[in-house]
Length: 439
Image 1: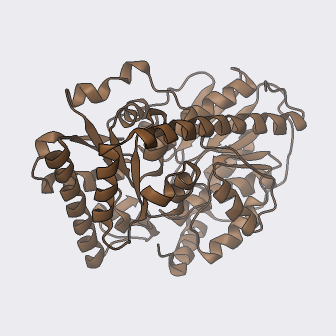
Image 2: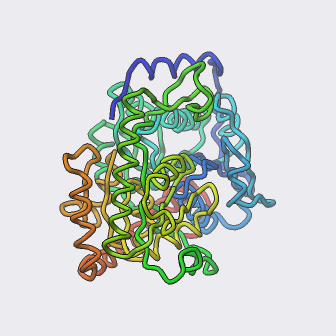
């Protein structure tokens, strides 16, 4: 993945232009009544993983601080967020603009605790803008004297310039709970000085609605199903521009990377996935579930479907239509998963679903290392003869899934036990600061 310093400089200039700079006066205090907690993350993006992780984190925070705690969830798109998160007396959803700095600072000032809930917190594979937002929230918390916790997060590919920013700003965090050992190692190698602990992704604690348990059977009756969670790697990173084509705009002023070469590469990727899906149908008599873990995956899924010989054996399950409960239920009912999405692999684990990864960043590599799948069933997306290798592994797993299912059952149990540590570590930290918590 390329990281272009010129794009980073553009982003900084845009942020300064629209947000401005101003001074602050630290006003640190303990909550005098029910604590107010700001949950800062990738909320309302029609992203299944972010949705599941947020909901599980809310359960953790409520169990620690009690039902009277006031939770605030900011979002770029509050309509999307309200699809799966219901506002109530003690939970508020607030709009944040893409030019976010003033709003985030105000929200931090109004709350007693800042919790960074986005798993890809210290990563810029998709865009540097999100990394900057989380570091800005951390910096505001430090300047305003508010405790800040990074809750079951990760680190990954970043530019050299961003390593320096992470070192400076993430070191101001009061507690960083990483979701993988490799992620924690990277943070220490970047000389981040904040306390760093390791748990696991709180999405492993997410519980779907039992009413969704038979969703896959309802959508693809009398079928055994293979899932494909594909990502168009060629759209990223999202970069800042003052103008561009509307079809390539993520949210102004951020646009997908695009060129004629990238367009051709995306077409080849769709064709490769279409041929893989047709092979599954024709050779193994399985139907196909195209899993769009974020709404931006929809275009690729539709392209794959349009290229297939047997589209009648395919269903698209998109996060723009199905909530995290429904998507997780589908994932856990699969015979096999071929995934480029981290949370597709993570959320399917409770179903002990055999899987093969086609990765474009370190998140799947780290997960597969921890669950014992990396040596045999992990591939980088630029690997030669990629889809033939994926087909070979899929063949093996479809013919004899038993050994892998047993290994994944043990791996899932370990991840769940570790995920529970995030709540325990946070409770111990807050108690050390004089907060009343239920550990």
